[in-house]
Image (cartoon, rainbow, N blue to C red; front, side, top):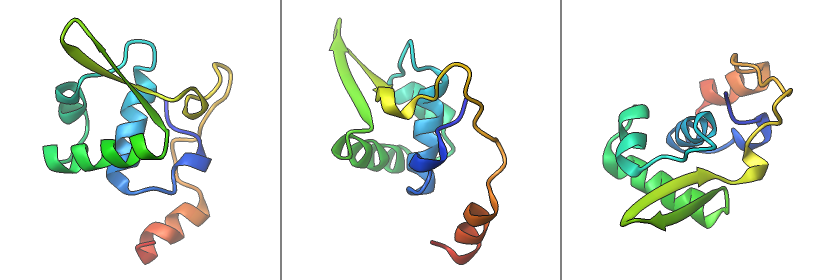
Length: 99
């Protein structure tokens, strides 16, 4: 499952983190699970998590000495909603221009 288009105008690592979290929205993920599921360095993942937390797009919970990260409810598409896996024309142009 992918993040809806309105949340995809962020840094590539942030979008990759959100996509990974949305795929495991019920269970959440640890930082190590995110690191293994996102093609980025640990520093890039940590920077992305910091920016997403500041933007209110993720929730962090600590239980049993373990930190789990969840996507905010507004980031998770509805069960019947299909988010296209292919970037749209505008997204392709933005990436091409480096925006």
